[in-house]
Image (tube, rainbow, N blue to C red; front, side, top):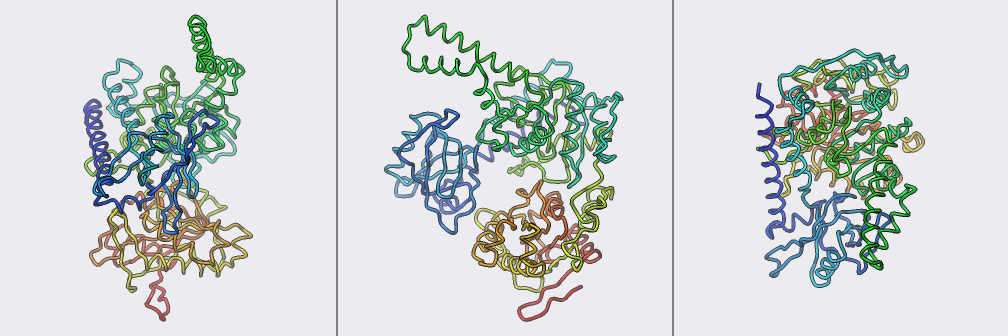
Length: 630
């Protein structure tokens, strides 16, 4: 087994490779030869203009408005609230692209307008002056702060002299075996036996426990109850996740359970619900804040003597510390992202237990940033679903997460949730057999649920006989326009089969999922063009597999895209991604793809056989010919 210190050194090298690759790709994307491709991507808008005046928002941040012309073929933006953005413009008659040093954060993204938080009036004026004479562009920038936090966490882990952190390090990535001590837990009558067993595992663990939650098994519900049970023994815990959305989701569930949650991090990246629990909002609502605000206003105005300013600064520091301490003492759960655990406010905080939700999507170095603040850690997630995003091929080993490593090497830590409440048992069956050793079972209330008794739970529409061809774009993504149009035809036929009235009355939901973002954008564009779906627009969601993680729909259609004679399937080789796609459906799963291309891979061969045995495989023929059912 690789030593823990050697493992840390390898992680540092992989992280350096990933950071370097991301920076190189970012630079290449603004090369003039690729400019037309770059500005057509969803993480970019060009040209944009800057509204002449900027104003301060409720949080005291300077916000400028960036406007652009909305065009029908614009891709859905990936510049969401909280993401860092940079500005650029063309020079030398379009032969060179120049980047501005000023960066900002998106606070709102609306059709035709972004509201961007700028660091200062000077930064705003600099961008505005360029916009007055140049065609300006805006795009997502690299988040180097995350890399700095992860590198610092690895350095601290390697050189620590803390006995507890060393014990955790050697337990999680070394040869030390995890320790358990049985503690009394009476169980929750509203949970199933496997969920209660998982909480017992959490209660008993001295070092580490894993709540392994396959799709639809109530992982978040179980983690929430595990947090509540832990708080019977500890006054405060930390709850983290790799993304703000995941932190907000579990925080909302904890708040609904009556737990006092303090959400720490960038307010721009929080959901509206969790903003009320944010440190900034709670800070501003503290009884001592009006006095602090008045002192800060007087200091900004500079209308007092030097001795008075000194006294005010001392009082300002005193109030700031007092408010922070009060907020911390009044909360049971401190919630933040893994990277956010390095936030200044939490520098000297330590916790008995750290819960990491969606841990199978978290880069290991990010996990260590939070683990260093705790005595023990509880992972929640599923390492058979989406891994973290790693762009550099040389750094692909970062896909092997800390949770996956512990689950594989220290199996006594793992509690599997074995009852799922989402899928018809036939939809569940293939995933259970292929990824979970056949251990999953469907709850009785969903096991035989269908949209209509005349339907089957599984259908694969085989496009092998049709003249469809995939297309690779310069961005690297792929589309299959014939398949996209077919999917909308099949969706319309299915809605007519069920009846639009029933879809609306019963609020049936449909999801169209594809591994390729370009295909998702194409399908969304075609969907908007069809009058039939206008009244049903709230019922139909189109997105990539990554976008559907954690979601579910009554009916799911998967666009496989790949259609070639060589059997090349590229992205579809990531079977964890496909596990996510096929487990989003509650009552009906439809797969659309070329069986001849896909089934050269054993996984898809087994999937096609399973569909034939538990549903149907329909071979589509060219125009004017009837489908041939197998």
